[in-house]
Image 1 (cartoon, rainbow, N blue to C red):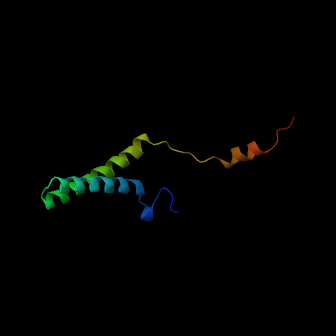
Image 2 (cartoon, rainbow, N blue to C red):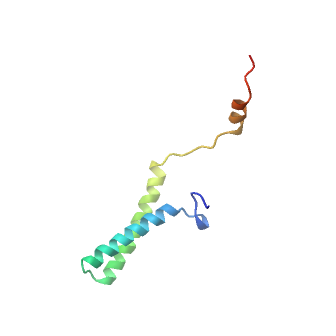
Image 3 (cartoon, rainbow, N blue to C red):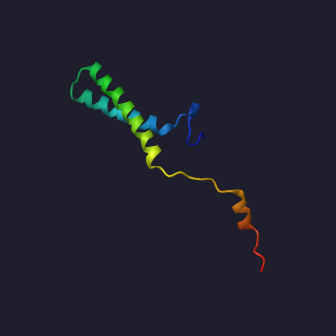
Length: 82
């Protein structure tokens, strides 16, 4: 398991969102009988926009989780003296 950071240090979710946006753009181009070169260009643009928007979402709207300090855990586990 690679965790939140994928292969080569890149996050996996922006690439997945970008790929889904590119797939939707390609499907829309095929269904509307658009020129194949224009469809591929739109899919590339959709991928980049999806990738960028997901990274912006991570920067501004995700919660940052701080690791629990071992000192606090050790203090909580020792019985209190009365």
